[in-house]
Structure formats: C-alpha cells, structure tokens
Image (cartoon, rainbow, N blue to C red; front, side):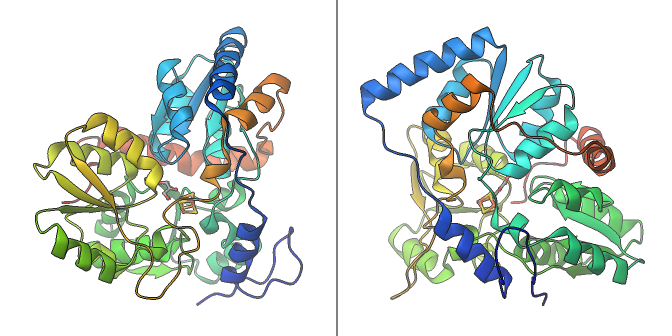
Length: 363
Ligand code: 13P
Ligand code: SF4
C-alpha cells in the first residue's frame, strides 16, 4: 500500500483517495445547451475545423455530440490506444483531443509537430492523480530488477520513467509476453487491472495502489441482482473494475473490445460495467439490443461518479469551441520528457502492430 503524500496542486493531502476526492469536488459539469444553441455551435465548429485543418479525436466516454462530430468530420472515436494511433497518422495541422489529459499528452508525444488542443486541460484521471512522479520514481528505484510497465492513464513524466506503456486493450498481451521472457514486472497505477493481469497470466507483478473512481464503484451484488432479472444477459466489463465484478463478466476488455464483443455476441440484453458514455456507440451499432448499465450503488450505498467519468464530462461543444477558436488549451510536453516517453510508447505501438490478431479482449 502506498500513500501518496505530495502533489503540486493541493495543500497537505493525506492519501490518494483524499486527493482524488478533492479533485472531484472541483469539477464543474458544462452548462446544458438548448437544441438551437447546440446546432449553432456545431455549425461554427465544423467551419473552424475546416478552415484550420483540425481533426477531432474523441474517446467513447465523451459526450455523444462530440463523438458524432468526430465521426462526421473525418476525425475519430475510439479507445485510448486507437486515439494515439490515429493522431499520429492524421494529416491534420491541429488535433483536438476530447478525452482526459493523458490522451492529449500521448497525442502530443506521438505528433510533436502538430498542435494538440483539448477542450479543457483540467480533465484529469484518478489514476494519473494517484501516481505522482516523485513517489513513483522512488518506487521504481527501490526495485531495479523489475521491468516497469505503466498504464497509459499517467502523466508524461511517469511514462518517461517506464520501460513499457500499455493501454487496457494490450496490457494482458504485453505482460504475458514479458513474463514468458522471464521478466519480473513493476506495474502502475491501476491495482484492479494489475490484479486481473496477474491472476490471468501468473506473472510476477508488484502492484501500485490506485484505482479508477468510475470502475471501482460497480457492484458485483448489483450485477447478480440484475442477472436474476435478465438471466440471459451477457456481462461485459472493463478491466479497471474490481475482481468481484470481473468474476461475473463474460467478456473483459477495453472500450473498443467491449463494443466489438457486444456486436458479436448473440445476447439481446447486455449488462455493461464501464462508463455510460459508451452506450452511444453501443446503441448506434446495435439498435436491436438492449444495454443496461451495471449498478454502481449497493444496498444503502451512494455512488460518487455514478458510472460517468467527471473529467470526461468536462468536454463539450462550448469548451471545444473556445479552445479551437483561440487555439488555447494547447497540450505541451517538455522535449526531453517527450523523447523519453516516446520510447515506451513506440514499443507499445510496435507490439500492437506485430500482434494485431491477438489484441482482441478475453472471453
Ligand atoms: P480504454 O483504453 O479502454 O479506452 O480505457 C481508457 C480509460 O480511461 C478507461 O477508463
Ligand atoms: Fe481515469 Fe477512470 Fe476517468 Fe478512465 S474513467 S479517465 S480511468 S477516472
């Protein structure tokens, strides 16, 4: 167990959980727009993107309006691995990343010559917050015999200290490969994903102690209750969920893997343990199926994030418009750090390209 004892932004935090809670208290959701305000902004955004040769890269958890705009304007909607790939391959001058901070940073590291903007630079991630570079670097220094494998949901500085970066779609395959090579792993920061990989691969893994505030709230008991009502439903879960939830899952995978499996499975009812932003694509691609969000509150418990990432929710037409118009909220990564972080990022992309067929989610 590691207690995080320092951040630059907050005074005297005492634990990773407290730091995350205090960040959450600062999050302000965007103002709701009327239909006509939204259509007007959308038209202005389309024009701006064309004039500036900008492309929108949106995560599945971002607002459905942003996902549709990305799809409609030659941009991209995907999981964090695919977002990173698309940004680099795109011929745009400006990439607008609608997601959370680490996604913008990965895009910038992979495309140093493009301008990378984000609707807001305040959109962080509980995993990133709970893995500050100073404590993380000391942890790595204490275990020089271990290969450092870091989840993409981290700062550029943490990435720069790693040997490998992985996203949820590829983490299992990379660790399996390293373990087969006889390597011992230091894993950070998501303890649930780490525990799942350790259990599945039997790799020798030392785990950092942090969690996703959204996925940690899904409740196994609630899913069991739901299965009693929908006995033929399939359960699809993101591996940031707890072990008890993953034990009930028919498929465990990244956001894209969940979407692919939802299409492939014959079940008409599907219980989904991940951020509810994904329902937009799930429903678009499977109009005849019924998707049910996994319960987040057990008996008499209350959820904090309620199956929607508060930081992803900060992305909106309004924040995107002001960022793109004035070219503010530019993501900048210091060049030495970017060069160092590029190596493990590239390692992941090369591995993904080489093992394309294996990266497909576990059923
Ligand atoms: P994916 O890589 O599966 O899109 O996950 C990113 C994330 O932040 C999940 O919470
Ligand atoms: Fe981070 Fe969880 Fe939000 Fe994903 S859903 S960005 S892991 S806080």
